[in-house]
Length: 253
Image (tube, rainbow, N blue to C red):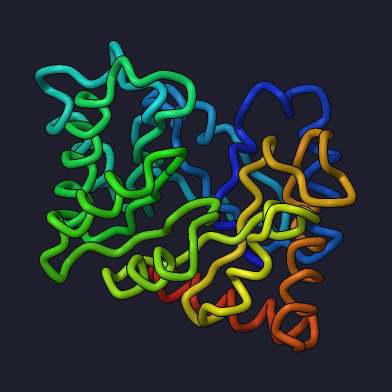
């Protein structure tokens, strides 16, 4: 299994990271892709290693962290990090209107810069979206020139929004929310193509049922796989194989 979105480098794992990694390896996690929250995230990513698991770094500024981080030289700083051979994605970026709308224009500016850097370095962009779907998709549509690829992280849109994102060249990141009993995401996902989906956890956030409310970790992705297997009437192995092929092709690994 490939976890395409995990913040395993965060302090929430400092006390027992080795045990968390052991559980991940035990359930078959072979790769973990790590979106950044800010540029300091990369320093923490570089400390990680575990036998049998490959860690892949990304660089970017989370939309909730744009204040004080997206300045005059931001485009150059972001490019210089993302152009490195050991950087496999741009983000996470995106829009978030849930916590605050004080910095909407700065979030949009940051997202446009992330899009342009992603096209320059030809790496996928990782898109966070919370209560901002229309603005997010409209902005991506304007930035898409045939070179932009990426993931709508934690997909929770409608069927039409999912299809629109796919038509624009995006993949859908499927994580714990697909397991939530009354969320409705499972019914939406059932009407969209599995070959445009990748697995993710967003650890330490958004734990799947039956671990909801607890700290998420890569090993919990097995519950998401089980849910997708039920939705698409496939074996667990088929879901893992199909989503892993998509992830490898998208990230070029």
